[in-house]
Image 1 (cartoon, rainbow, N blue to C red):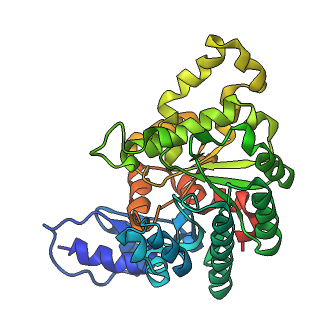
Image 2 (cartoon, rainbow, N blue to C red):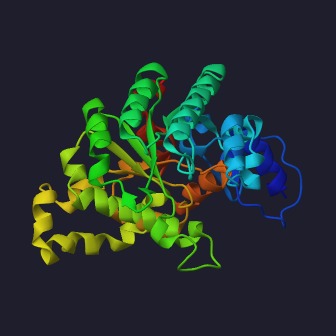
Amino acid sequence: MFNNDAACTHAAAQYSCFCEPTPSRRGFLSGLGALGAASMLPGCTTAGSGAGVKNRIDTHHHVFSPAYVAELAKANQAPPIVRNWSLAKTLDDMDKAGVITSIVSVTTPQVQFADAANARRIARESNEWAAKIAKDHPGRFGSFIMLPLQDIDASLKEIEYGLDVLKADGIGLLTSYGDKWLGHASFAPIMAELNRRKAILYTHPTAANCCRNILTPDVQPTVVEFGTDTTRTIVDIVFSGTAARNPNIDFIFSHAGGTLPFLTERLLRAPIIDPKLVARVPNGVMHELKRFYYDTAWSAHPGALASLMKLVNVSQVLFGSDYPYRTGEDHVKGIIDYGFSQADLDAIGRGNAVRLMPKWKA
């Protein structure tokens, strides 16, 4: 009998074979070619084929520069998972999950804890640090830069510097700032500039002022509010007319769009209930929802994926891990276990990201 655990581990190390252990199987695997062994092992599924097994692109991966961690600590907003992060750990997680490139970003609170002057400084330092680790580790890192949105003019300058000088892959914003979601009129200059540049806008949820530790005081905002805030900002972007006015922005929403897939029917009926919304979505609600991109972070499980795949084509799904809050391996296993075809796994793992960011094709 084969020792399935040991054999799968051996195959996984060489060919990105992800396996369900079967403790009852005992013995020794020998006399098989390594590739043949991977394909014949009970409970073992290959994560890719050919060159694709080690070249995933993770579009939802968080990093924290030492200077940024120090600023968070001053504001008493540096939890252990942030203080204990390291570049070595992030590279190790990437390697285990077959991720060749991570497009890194800073998660909430970004620079919302700082006044405008310090927000400008902290954002610039962090964006430059992300560019440096990309330079120091060729091919391993891209970035979505953060903006000091307390100052719109400074944010426009940071877009110019980040995209033109630092060569970032796009902009990373939170889903809300105070009680303003991304369709708010105050953010219109940012959206117009990103539209002019045909830029990527990655978004990460946070908890809005209205709902932070108030509605469910014994439950962290990450449990309910993050998914809800993602949905709020999508709704605001669509029904404010921001999406229609800015067709050249490639929006990426975290966590499979939060609760959006489940609530899609309500969005479709909103213009019927309130006719003034019709003019703001001239191409229709579904047109906008289907052109957005959605990542797999915290969503690589049947409940979220089944709902998302009823909303969009696989072409709009990007691999995301949310490291260090989850691991890349968690999400690789989740999307494989869901039962996607190999072609779909390749698209989610790399192809869709390369189409969105052609510079990573090589």
